[in-house]
Image 1 (cartoon, rainbow, N blue to C red):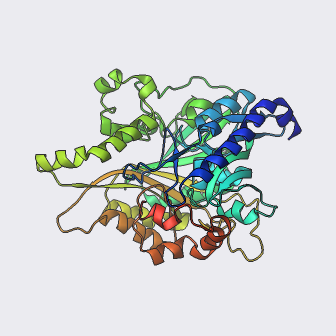
Image 2 (image 1 turned 45 degrees about the horizontal axis):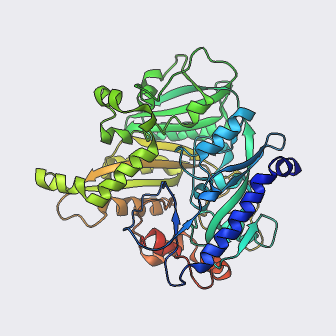
Length: 474
């Protein structure tokens, strides 16, 4: 790491000064006041009421400190977005091992929460490529956590803690080489069972029909219309598509499916193919209509813009009131990502089509990298989100509104999803609303292990606990 530090002495000196300043600011917060971060963006869908609580200024931690193209590592501030990190690494022919789909997801957010993308079948989750994390703990100390030092338990327990144990200030992460272009092949399927079998086969071999596969994901447009997208790095492309203007990426999938030449994107555009339309959720703002799309500025076709519009709608209650005055049924937001073992993925799809009825559904396979073994006495490598080693999971992502019928319980559809995922032995990400009872929550997310970490790194409970933050939404 000497090359990084020598070439970025001022950046690292500024970082050290920012850490000292943040510690002072944290110490000055009232001990009985909730701790909030002053952040310009968020990708969480747990909307809290506005608060006058003082906020920690973490803006100094939003930059790439250094990229080492020889060692293939980067050092970044915890509030650095993947958009900025990708912009810094691609000129070196490198990228993070997993780049979550949305530009303004931060490195710290993807590690203390969870992230996933189409390289996850071979590279696991974003926190698995982290070598070191500098953390401001709930006790106000700053510690450096690594797999092999005295803070190793915090290192492994930090993922899925959602800022309730502390905040990441600096991360050292691995990078991998890329080629200039990505070749996409979209394979059609007529049943969930066939699609899951294909996921299992392709992910095991990392190839299809003799061609290496670097990325795998898929979309279910309905019970009988599913596509798996296999993507591979290539040096040259006969053309490249552009889905940042009038064309929409997800609509291209059926068009390019089958035995033809497929599609081609630059590696940059592949990484952000979902961001322009927030997968397909930009349709709620009319961007699926050509006339609206032409008028919408290209620079505002971004997930963070749409998320701010949704937050405004939640604050003003506009959509609910509009439905009321129009005499339409009220709607329940169902915005979730869940992981289910591939062998039970078809069961989940059958349930979802029958009981929830929302489409499309994003599908993304993942398997833990397996580069780290659990320490003695620890059942799972990442104890707060316990996935089985060597098991292939499929992440199902679904984001939209479902009509409510008279007499249905609060959060009817969300609870149905939670119950089915538990029945199938899966897990649910916590970036959105959760409705578990406290006993159920701690059983699913390792309450015993979490409480041990909380006692060690936030003994005075300056920060919320995980249940209060993710279910009570405080």
